Amino acid sequence: MQGSTAESSPISVALADSNMLVLSAMSEIFDRDPRFSLVATASTAEDYLGTVIRVPVQIGIIDWNLPALGGQKLIEVLRDQAYAPRIIVYGDNANDLPRQALAAGAAGFTPRNGPVDGLLDTCASVAAGQMVFPFLDVRELRTDPIHQLTKREKALLEALSRGLSNRQLAAEFEISANTVKFHLSNLYEKLSVTSRTQAVAFFFSSQLGSKSSFDD
Image 1 (cartoon, rainbow, N blue to C red):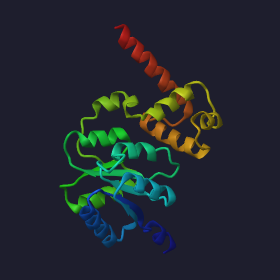
Image 2: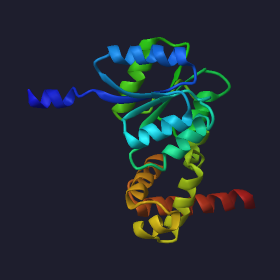
Image 3: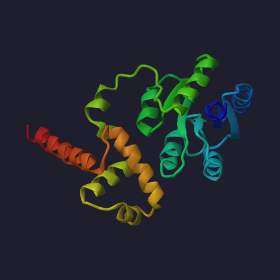
Image 4: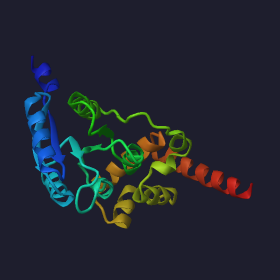
């Protein structure tokens, strides 16, 4: 019975939406579902950032057009935090937004005009470690995973290629050792590698590929 209780622990969630009516409706939806524990809500990116840094949660659902930072910048800033939530963008399924959310580092996307159950199921799937997006032609991203990396992750990969240790990386980027580990974990996942050596090998292979394309 104890194992069953642990498995059924609710998923902690924080919501952010600039539309107060939407925020209120979403709060009620998550409050009613026993799979989730609604920890906090916010109507601006700055308030949301401050909240999830103070009180870490597993899943964040955000409006892409949050004032004033916006969803993309908010995701990038959160990626520098050691215990950042996995982010789901809740937005209009238009203007290539799902692809932008994926490229920014979101773990999922749910359209605003979709069913409520779709949002809840997406949150549960993302909490279980999945990436959930509508159909996207991601062949370009898969061909060159470098496109999925944030600026900091690209800089981190380049620093890895110089043989820097985790302690040296922390000093160079002025972040904690735990944050370095968090970034490396995300970096390895995006590159589909499992070690520092493989990541460095990927970097040099990518560099050679770029030079070959240029020469051609």
